[in-house]
Length: 198
Image 1 (cartoon, one colour):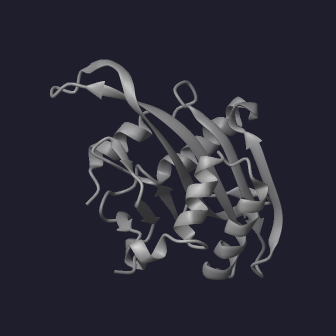
Image 2 (cartoon, rainbow, N blue to C red):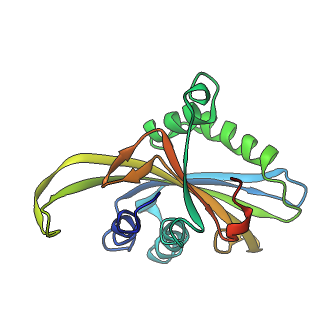
């Protein structure tokens, strides 16, 4: 089960003044499920307005209804080997979105598995969070002991030409549990919680 406070700790930082997002990458899919352009840029190179809009998309994933729209899933040991989705996501995270070949592979997998007869965007965010040490009363004690490095992926319907709406599904990888990295789990989001597969 996901802890709501863990998710809120992440979202509190997703403002233009507090964010530590490093990069944003993504692609656009047309109505036929074909890739119609990609992008990959340093998050700080975005205009203030673009940062605000993109942070609202990223924030929608962890801020959603915990354990209803956003649920935790474990990667079984036999699905963490060579060629697995877990290995691909771990590699994308480790390179900080700086390997376009890995991202292209990921977009192709999304294209194969997310069958929507409408245009949509795939947005991938990379962030590093210095998790501060806190006392039992939640007061900050000092410097961080862990850096939580993670991805947020959001699949958004296009509301105009290359204009994404709010996410319909996505994920947080790896999961954030008890204020720490849970490398073998992901938090998966569906705006329509009935779409979760148990």
